[in-house]
Image (cartoon, rainbow, N blue to C red; front, side, top):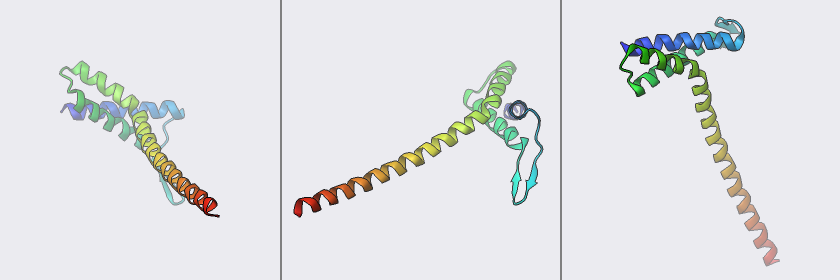
Length: 117
């Protein structure tokens, strides 16, 4: 039951975060070939973040449940952004590493060909 309350409180905080960031609540709508989620993503991000934090902290009182859910719901968007940033950072690091290996291989071949000439 605490997970449900956590999700509801976190969702409410996600909605409030959405309203604060956009200055209003944007409804979901279709945009040519793309569906714009509007406030729904912030609502879900806040709720899921609250479930995660409530599960990890296991609050024992109603006050602790409310406090952790509010914090998690408010930070849900930030949490998702950080996860995406970390994923993007990993991909970029892998690409840079691959380019560095290829450049080193080309330089090695080039210096060997200059030595043999």
